[in-house]
Length: 185
Image 1 (cartoon, rainbow, N blue to C red):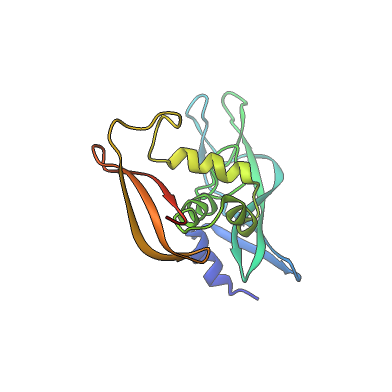
Image 2 (tube, one colour):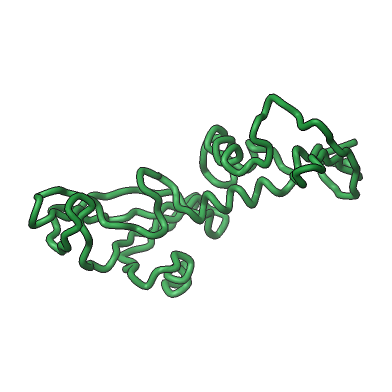
């Protein structure tokens, strides 16, 4: 079973309280909550620490121990004492309206640097292929996918992907950006 201090370091937050870790043959679930603190109302900017209620949110995380990993977060909904607006607490590692952590998104993008298919990356990270494609489009170096730049450079380099000895790289030399890497010549 993973060490609790390791998980706190992984989440990069001292405010995380780990309530339980449930592990089976295929997945790991980390049941956590955050320490309660004063929040600022997004509507009127008043400070409040009054909790309205709690909600459970299941979030995908980087695979741990070769298994699908989920964070089961017990989120607080605060209520402003001044304007009565209800809002969720701020979670540093979880963007608003997302079902996966920032770390998982960064890990998926880093996996796309390897010469593997998007389908493989999706299987490894427990997300859909369309999610991987959406993340790729966010960080892709070529803004217009349908147009090639005015000048391109094509070169090969030694590697070992899919049984091929050499891979092909296509570069935009004017902007210094990689357009594509092909698995063989």
